[in-house]
Every structure is written in structure tokens, then in C-alpha cells.
Amino acid sequence: MEKYSKSLPELGIGNAPAYEMVAADVRALSTALDAPDFFAHMDPAPSKIAAKLVGLNAQYNQNLLHPDLSPFATKAERRVIDWLAPIFGMSDGHMCCGSSVANLTGIWCARESGATRVVASADAHLSVAKAAHILGMDFDAIAVDQDGKLDPSELKDLSDSCLVLTAGTTARGAVDPMVQTIAVWTHVDAAWAGPLRLTKFRDVVSGIETADSIAISAHKWLYQPKDSALIFFRDPQASKLISFGGEYLTVPNVGVQGSRSAAAIPLLGTLLAWGKQGLAQRVENSMKDSETLAHFLKEHPETNLCGWPQTGVVNWRPKISPILDVVQRLGNCASITNISGDVWIRQVAANSYVDIDEVIREIEKALQ
Image (cartoon, rainbow, N blue to C red; front, top):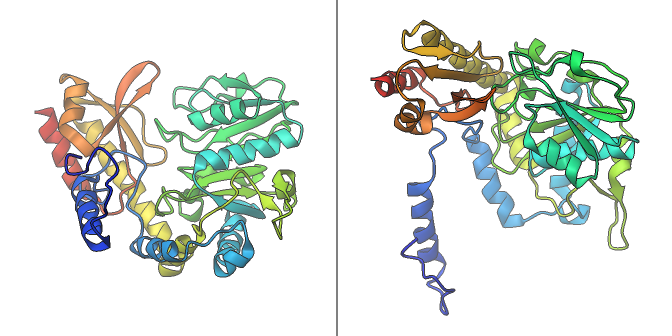
């Protein structure tokens, strides 16, 4: 940051020079999510059409809080919701700025329906506990089994609870059993694995349609730029639980956010460009990549595989080399996570441009 003055400049340098100055650093200093060996996180490069439409969106700066300021964007979001919600057994929903907000929205609906407690697995995303704290609800973490899934036998009386099930935990990609209970409300955090519903792996998230609400991160396996997520509701009247009016509003404001960007437009463009089959093929290729890597690690004499990947997340450890040294050598090819108190290497099949053979070569070099 040396070339940027520590205090706000009195005089500007002009649009073109400023753009070139900042753009050069964006290009040089950003993580390349589409690199052939990027396999570290749940962050794919967005679709090319989505990236272009984000720029166009910024020029028009539409605000979905006011339909008169977003005549096309409001209709685009409605169309995307109508396309996707039925695939998950849902009937309504809206977009928001991330799955943390989507989870907060679903749990908020649960509180408005009478829930006073949130129950989720010990491996649930931290946004679930945060949502409970924000909403003034108690939070209970339930033990997971050896595969990282919520153990249904640990569930007690849920008559006052919002049960949050996870479809794709951050550490292991585990999918909780889609149990049916007498909970006040069941919310599924499907930020990561939800899009499997559109693929031949749809049975991995079988039962998700019985939930009252579902959160999906569009900037993961729907290949959208950040910040983009969806919250779906099974009951078409659920949105009324979290709707507020105001003297300056022509329609009620639904959900946590007030002003919202036209995030549905890049998603609409992506779905039009790829279709259901094109989207499914990319996700299915990622699942295949994770299985190819798991096969390699299972057979390698110097690595221990932590279970078979459930939703494209691979966890393993070197038998001899210090794990942190290996991770450092792997760079953006891998990250680390904690499983049952132990550190494991974590690799995630999100990058649709990955060369899995290149990833394997990087692991072989890191183990030497």
C-alpha cells in the first residue's frame, strides 16, 4: 500500500489514472480462484456472464427496497425465485447478501413462530450461533457422529425450538440427517451443498423439502459474485412474519436488509446461459474431482484420508511430514480445519477450472 498516501489526498488524480492504479493491484494481488491448482476453499470463480452483469448493475445501482427504483431487477428476482424454489420443495423467498443473513432470516421466522431456542450440530456454521445471539434465543450444540453429522439420538424435546440442520458443513461437507421432528421450525443451512439438488447427487440432500426454510449461498456452487445468497420458505405466507411497512415505502420491506442490490440479475444471466444441465454438470464435475483426489489420498502410503468426501470436501493428513509445513507448501491448493480437536488438511472442489492432476502433483511435491 506504499503508493497510496496515508491521508486522504487533497487533489484527485482523475478517473482513468485512479482506475489503472487500483485495477493493477486488484489483478496482481487478488487470489486467483480460477487457477488450475486452487482447491482450498468454498469459493469458486463466478460465471463470466455474472461478472459482466455485476459491472452493468453497478452503473444503474438498482435498489430493491423501492420497486420504482428497480423495475427490472424486482422482476428478475421474482423469476429466479420461481425457477429455483420448487426444486427445493419451497414456494417463496428472496435474495440477500450472504448465507449468514439467510440463516438469520430463517431463524428469525422461527422466533416469530414461537421458537425460543436454536438447536444445531456442534459443527454448524458460526452464523447459526450468531443468529441465536442476535435474536436473543438460547443456543444448544448437539454432538456429531464420526462422519460429522448431527446425531439424531441426541435430540431431546424440541417443542420450543428452531432445529437447524446443515447440508454441507464447513469443515467436512457433512450433511445432517433431514429428520422430521415436532420442532416449532426447521431451517436447513444448505449454503454449500444445496445445489446438489439440481444434480444426479440430489439424494445426498433428500428430505430437504420438508424444512420450513432453506438458506443457499449463491456465491458458492451457483457461481455468483459475492455477496449473493437465497432464503427459501415452504409456506408462501412466511414472509409476512418478517415484513415491515413504512411511510416512505410503497410495498412492505421483507427480511433483514433494507436496501438491496440487484443480485438476481447476474444469477438470472448465469441460469439462462448454462441452463439446469450446464449448472449441474459443473457441480457434478466438482464432485468427481473430489472423488479422484480421495482415491489418490486413500492409496498414497504417506497420507491418511479422513473419511470419504460427502459433498466435495476432502480432509486428510500426512503420516510423516509436519502438517503445517505441508499446508504452507500447498499454498492456495489447500487450507486447514479442526476435526475433533485435531488439525486436518482441507481441500474443496469448488473451482470449475481446476486441473485435478495439477492438484495431485502439488500434493506429491509438498510431501517430498
